[in-house]
Image (tube, rainbow, N blue to C red):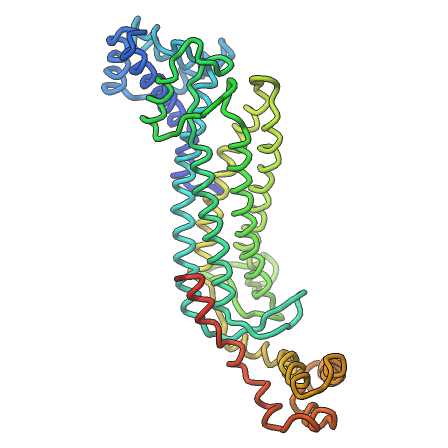
Amino acid sequence: MIPRYSRPDMVKIWEPENRFRIWFEIEAHATDALAERGVVPASAAQALWTWWNTNPTIDVAAIDAIEAVTKHDVIAFLTWVAEQVGDEARFMHQGMTSSDVLDTCLAVQLTQATDLLLADMDALLAAIKTRAMEHKFTPTIGRSHGIHAEPVTFGMKLAQAYAEFTRGRERLVAARAEIATCAISGAVGTFANIDPEVEAHVAAKLGLAVEPVSTQVIPRDRHAMYFATLGVIASSIERLATEVRHLQRTEVLEAEEYFSPGQKGSSAMPHKRNPVLTENLTGLARMVRGYVTPALENVALWHERDISHSSVERYIGPDATITLDFALGRLTGVIDKLLIYPERMQKNLDRMGGLVHSQRVLLALTQAGISREDSYRIVQRNAMKVWESDGAESLMELLKADPDVVAKMTASEIEDRFNLDYHFKHIDTIFDRVFG
C-alpha cells in the first residue's frame, strides 16, 4: 500500500482498527448465539457488549505486543480482549478456530471494499456518459492496426467504454455476492464443537451468506474469482487510458488530459504536456492484474487447510482494492476534464484524401455489375496513389478520372459515396442499446 496511490476511505477498511473491530463483532455475535443455546452464560455475551459499548477503543500497539510473544494474531487479540472484559471473556471463541474469525473478517472487508469500488464505477460511468452524449455525433477517424479505417464518432468511442465498464460493474456485483460468505464451522469445518446455527446467526448479523461447506477455511476459488474480476476491470481502465494516450500524441492530438495552471510537463523541456495520468493508470492496471495470479495459486491448499494463502492475502487484499479504488477515481477525473478537439479530429479525417470512404466505392462498383475482385483492384490502384502522395491526391478526383469507374458510376454517384453522415445513421441505435 503506497500513500501516493491511496484514498483514505479505502485505506480505513484495511487498517488494524477496522480489522479488530470486525473480529470483535464476529466473536461477540457468536457468543450471543451460543448463549441463546445455553452453551455459555448469557452474562458472557452481555459482558462483551457492555465493554464494547462503553469503551470501543482498540489498542493496536497492545495487541501487537502480545502477538510478539504468542506469535499468533487471533490469540493475541483474544488475550487483549480478556484483559479488558475480565473473567466472562473465557467463553469467547467456544468451538471456533482462527480461520472462522480470519476468513469471515476478510469477507466483510472485501464486501466493504467492493461497495466503495461500486460507487467508484458509478461515478466513472456517469462521467463517461456525460462526455459520450456531448460528443455523440462528433466525427473522428476509426483506426484498425493504428491505421485510418473508417469514420466513427467520439461519442461512440466513449459508448464502447461505457458498455465495457457496465459489464465490469455487473461482474463486480456478482463477485461481491460470491465473496460475501461466512464460515463459523470450527476445526476442519465439521461443526463438531459449534452448532451451524451459530454460523447462520453471525452471517445474518454481518450481512453475509453461510458457506455451504468449508474445510477449515472458506474455499479460495471464491477469492480467485474476486481478484480476477478486479483484474478485468483494471484491464478496462488500461484500455481507455491507452486510447487517451494515443489520442494525445502530437501527430494525432485529438484529445488530451487537462493541463492545470502551473503544471509542468518536463524538467528539461518547457513545452511538454505529457499524458502522465493515463500512463500512471496503465502502470496501476498492471499492478492490479499482478495480484490475480497469486489469488489463483491460493486455491490449491493442503487437505483441510494450510496457511500458504495467508501471507498472499495480507498483501493482495489491501493492495488490489486500494489500487483499483485510486485508479477508478483517477480515470473519472481524466474523463471529466478531458480536452477534446473536434477540429483536429476533422483535420485528421481529411488527412488522407478521402481514403476512409474506399469501402463505399468498392460496394457501389460491385452493385453496378463489376466483380468484387475487379472492384477491389480498381479502388485499390487509385487509393495507393493517394497513399503514396501522403494525401495530396484526392481519391474522389482520381476515381472520377478512372475510365473503369466512370463507365459504371456518374460523378454525383461517386461524390455521394464520400458523404460523412452516411457512417453515422445508426449512432442513435447504438446509443439506445448502450444507454437505454
